[in-house]
Length: 332
Image 1 (cartoon, one colour):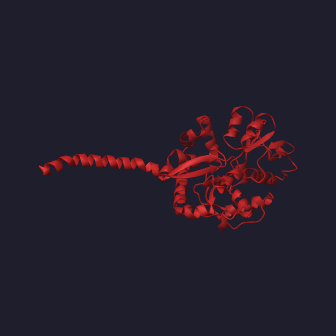
Image 2 (cartoon, helix red, strand yellow; image 1 turned 90 degrees about the vertical axis):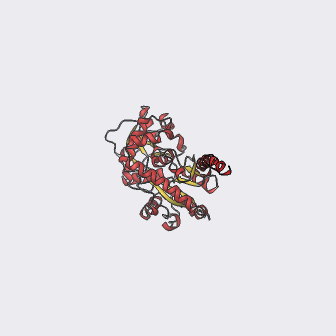
């Protein structure tokens, strides 16, 4: 009798065990490691990052990502240094500034995302044959002094024989998030804008994209991920997983059409029409903005310091090995 009872109970046990296993699998979602990422801006320029979010690459790597926007590299760097965020996503120039300021637990770059400037020259008028010299004597809304967008823009102006401080009326006292609105309201002849702002200005009929700063400047390590030295030391497995997720996003963007990419990242830009997103992704892809991998090369770090030096913003040069690690990106 006991033998039959055991046999009869076995299916129930198996079924119960199966339910427990399923519950355990579902429960694994609750064991994701939280990572607070502060991005310098929310732009289609960073499409690989949003692909990684929307395709679930971070979750597959055991990461629950919390994304906030700093609206400026200075604010993003401060968020990480103060402990309000774990990872900074911004121009690597900010890591050089804070190192030279003597921060003991300084920020180290561990992955690069984009390789060109992501901003565009937007004109009040349609200029089919735009020349950079057209900016002479005109009022131009630029970026924050010492910030990557502004320095690369000034770098391009100098390439064309212009002195940014003397040859144009450069406006630099408008907050990053408000430059497009200031331009639309008539405060300048030109503005230097990221996407989707540049295209949205066009669609409003308030201006025209006439030039790409990224095309003109060449390859620049424009945005990278960085963490405090202490965080890097204590979270190596986590940062390796984070890097893996970003690289999957890069691979997707570089192997799929702008239409496919736009469909994936559309939830990140709910106020932007899908066709507009596609147009912007295509614009960035055509100028080779999206890096194929996360490795931050030494030549790029040297170049960014050349730009800083030329802009008069570099107190002293920093060794590549001090502020950049490729230990995670070199694994893929």
